[in-house]
Amino acid sequence: MNMMYEIVSSMFAALGAYMLATAWLDKTVIPEQGKMKPDRAAHMKSPGYRMFVRAAGVMIRMHPKKDRLAGYFERTRKRLLLAGGPLSLTPEEFLAMKELVCMAALLVSTALGFSLTLTVVLGTGGFFYPDLWLREQYTKRRTAILKELPYILDLMTLSIEAGLDLTGSVNRVVEKTKQGILRSELFQFLQELKMGKARKQALADMAARTGVPEVVSLVSAIIQSDELGTGLGRTLRIQSREFRTRRFQRAEKLAMEAPVKMTFPLLFIFTAVFFLLFGSFAVQALRGKLF
Image (tube, rainbow, N blue to C red):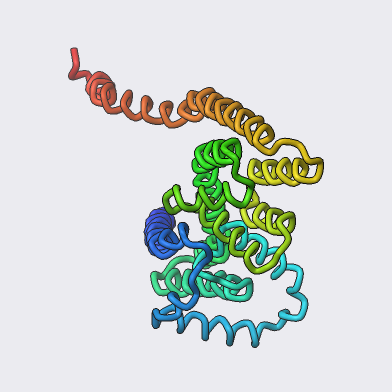
């Protein structure tokens, strides 16, 4: 009985901690999504953020394996870039966040009197929770980019066919579209061109920042069209058709997967309803009081 109580208590505690942490992190990250880049200076105005940065700096300086973490920091830097740089975290601060969440989970589980096994499980889950959160941020960012892409691509195509070049069409898109992730990436592309970066390199950097295969494919087609001297308007129209076909196929795939994903939840729901409706009749029949 005590073991069952600990399991149920730990499940509710973990669920509550997950919901609170996710709500706080999403509330902090979502306002950043439409900006050109995360504003670290704005975050530093928060006392809690400054305290975390100082604690992270101390933890990294005292880390026993910091000299052997160069590869991990490089991979984390790429993951943070693809996720849009949430909370303006550096790779070192992200590792410190994982360790702090792990220690918090261990302290809470110990204070609640959980068993050693459950404490270790909660501590391990706390260490890997920021990785799951970062993956979720990348998924949300990719979904938002895919939603913006068809409209922006159509507007670029119309602008180029009306006589504008690539830079002029991107500038028109930035002026006419509302705030969004892909729009902010295009704005950063224009800023890099003004700073003197080559157009090919600026396009490649934009594709690397998004990490979305559709954007990478579009950038490759634009670069190839620019190098070969083919009509950019025709290239963009072909890309637009391909993206709409992929979007339809993706929606069709999700629609076909929906019944399979609903099978197990419905099975549990129908089982619960069955026991709820016929359980009392079965008990009364066994007691001989039904007939």
